[in-house]
Structure formats: structure tokens, C-alpha cells
Image 1 (cartoon, rainbow, N blue to C red):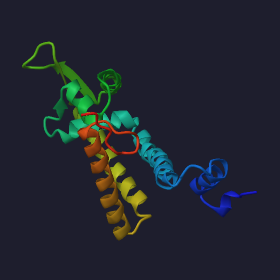
Image 2 (image 1 turned 90 degrees about the horizontal axis):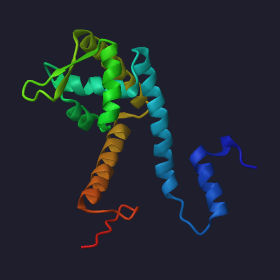
Image 3 (image 1 turned 90 degrees about the vertical axis):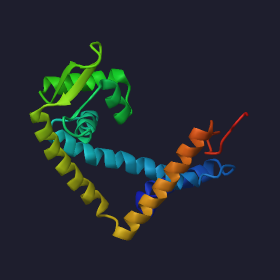
Length: 184
């Protein structure tokens, strides 16, 4: 019987799939499975900091998008959705919660009476700057498990992979393997 101490969790899953499906090359699990598990772990570690400031991950993202906009720290809801990669419906819920907490305000857009503008309040700016400082400190703590050369190599690999995947996506549909499946 296999024991958890004998190998990491992903290696155990791979071994079991090799036994059950020897006809498949399950080697991608070594990368994808570990990235998936690492992403879940990192998200849990990051959200602990957000929660200390009374924020969800999504609310932190909204405040971050407003703060990155520069003074006067405001954006239209559609811009916020684009900068946080969520739907406008999800954005409305986040902004509602942040507005109730006194961290953002909404006002009519000056150039479009139907449009709205979301802006950080002074309290929102102070809270976000404090939370962001703690967030960056936490990210440094998490990356401290790698030496600087490992962190640089990982950053380069992830950047290259992301660019290639996004390039394939921009060029046309992919067939699930990252290869373009173009019909033209």
C-alpha cells in the first residue's frame, strides 16, 4: 500500500493513473496538478490577509484596480470589470458591498448621465494601502521558500508559457493541447 510519505500527492495520483490507464501519458499532471494545488494553496494564504482587513479577494481586486488608476482613484464600472476580469453583474455586487462599507462611492459620470463612476473614499484609500502593504509582505513571505535564482527562473518560465498560451488563443481556437486548431 502506498503511503503519503512515500511521494507527494501529485506523484501518487500519477502513479495510480499509470496503473489504471497505462495507455495514457499522464506526465502533464506533474506540472498542471502541482500548479493547480499550488494555486489553491496560494489563494488560501493570500485571502487570509484580505480577511484581516474585512475584504474578500474580489473586493481587494476592485480596490486595487481603483488604486492603480491613480488620483482621483476612480473608474467606470465597465473598466473595473475589465481590470479585474469579472462580469459587470459580479462587479455590481462587489461595489455595492464596498459602498456600504464606506470604501467607495458612486456618482454619475460627467460626460454621460447614464454612466456611473466608482471612486475610492479617503477611508477606502487608507484601508487599501494598509492591506496592500500587508499583501506584498505576505507575497514576499511566500516567495521566500525559493532562492532568488529559482524565483527568477520560475517567473521566466511562467511568463513564456502564459505568452505562448495567450498567443495560441489569439491566433485561433486551440485543440486543448495548446496547438492551434484553425479551419482557415
